Length: 282
Picture (cartoon, one colour):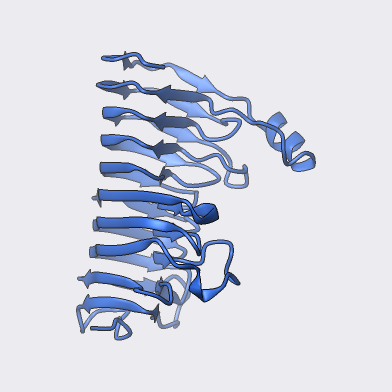
């Protein structure tokens, strides 16, 4: 906490010995599991070359930090381990996560509220829940995320791929987000925006976090879901300026055709790729 110019590197291992926590917390959902490694208000932070295994909860937490470089990490936990995110980011700016392997039981990288200028490159993700922005807006909260750029990453056997998730009734925005040159290998929900995260039955009039200026360019590979593109946007303003270019995927199930589903999503898409995305509104 509040250590500026901190560098952590080398070949060491942080082992959270999480299984006893995972088993106990299945019985007591309120048990306070810790993160294995947390940084709070640490500027000019560098972390590289470590191995992280079986965290009690998320492996690395970054909160209130500015100017962070994280590289050459190996983060692993069983696919069924609960809430073992690889890297959780909140209220932080100017982060670069690159050249790493993350395979856990939850998000490989989770980007939470009040974070901006996050660059993620050359990360192999899987198993896990993909790279996620959100969830944002829980309980009507105001939260913002902007300038997130994910490129040259691979999702292998993940539950989700490139995901943005917000709660119904939330406020704020997620904008200026790009996913470029992404490879999917038997990934579920490869491209997904979901503005009804968890509380799908909330009243339509409660509002949404505004999502805009999101692009998916050069996404290739295979999907385990026939619905390879899913833009489930709110009933109000919806999602604006969604761009889908050079997205070309095939089904992991022989003979199945992929398709896209949109709800109140506005933008443009390439017309001759698979899956086609004709459901985007002008």
